[in-house]
Image (cartoon, helix red, strand yellow):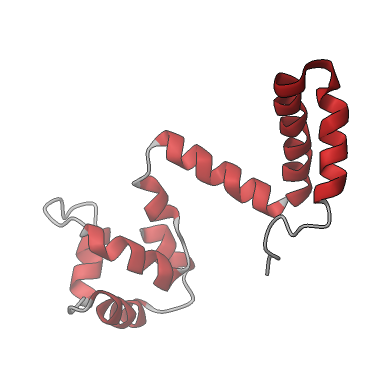
Length: 129
């Protein structure tokens, strides 16, 4: 949380104001400081503030800490594929070959290639912005 606040372009008071609006209750500067302090063990960040904090600071690291290891792996994999769309296309081609091989035996790879050519004109996924 300290890292997210340190890297945020907003000052702590503005972060508190935006958190207050996002969660619908007053988030004071003192509360924010207590959540960040190592010495304030009874002060725990409420779970409903976590998504708002990620949105306000632009850092989703704190949200990722609440995910199990498998979910973090899936999220990281998805982000990698989203950033490198040709990898997904290669994977789709290989998957189609395997599925068609299971369904059609030796003719499977040839039929998969034919199916891919026929499907190319269809919009497979939405354009990324």
